[in-house]
Length: 138
Image (cartoon, rainbow, N blue to C red; front, side, top):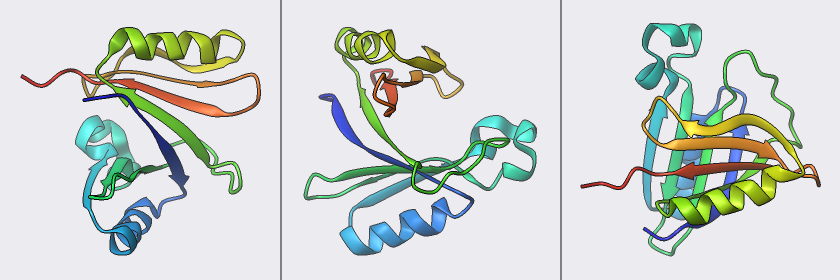
């Protein structure tokens, strides 16, 4: 899978409805994972909220979205970040190093509970970046 760059939108509890709406608008395939899918009992009240959603269309669009993680504040107007993802670890680590080097790291680039390597940072211009290195299937 080549690396991809796409918008990632944060929602305040209505990610499922929003992502289903975008599927109606653009078509495509929608995958939704809840906090409960990955956090089990630790997810608590957020178990049914969306931890990660991805809409992929036949036209090549990719839109990702999620409900804010438990305990974080939703800030409309500042709820969109940019996701860079793929399987080329060297390429993606290079992007991470450049983006986070003069910025602020919120989540270190390391293996996560879903099996991929993931990190989140804000670059020196105030843009939030999500970098996900997928574990190759096979």
